[in-house]
Picture (cartoon, rainbow, N blue to C red):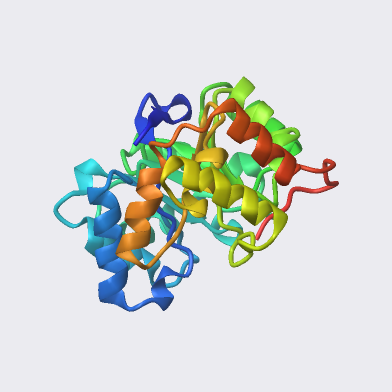
Length: 279
């Protein structure tokens, strides 16, 4: 598993982590076993959120006794993102997770509360040792510029965004902004949230050909492609231990220039959209 420095945190984090959106819809024992299998395979970055139903307690159960080995991330919903609301929401997440700290705490998407209030709440939590860093999610360039103007350089740990083979909009401006400013880019839903390329489609055949050459799967090739850029990470979600191990193995794959060119042609990024795509 390759690791990279996660934004300005100075922490080395695996390029492939574990997402937990909809994990609470799985059998709890299977969900916990999957997270633990992922940890054993090297996916020590676990991402969750207060709005993910019962995902936080599942994560808490999975990391019990191994908290120090985990880079743990959760997110606050915009409706709770006032200065005092951020602090209260974080305390609730910490209780559900059974831990005394988060490695990163994110604003889930831009909302009605002034960003300066949210960042003030993050700063208060960091000073109290409740979070070690903070970041954002679903922020376009204008939102990132606003956060940078308030917080200053080196404060935004990451921006978590929608990123998969058939949705590469963030490559136009968001990814370059993050690279210029030392902000980690974390792609969510790397398999398209149920819309992974059909193996009989032209793109699916390209994936299969490259996967066969590397002795791996099409999904693993997709993960390798999505983490090719410096400063990029991805957090696939699964409730199956064998799939977790497959996701982890993708973090060790190095695609050739010919592989990258073939995938770029098969899944073009298209024109820059007017607004940032998100789920």
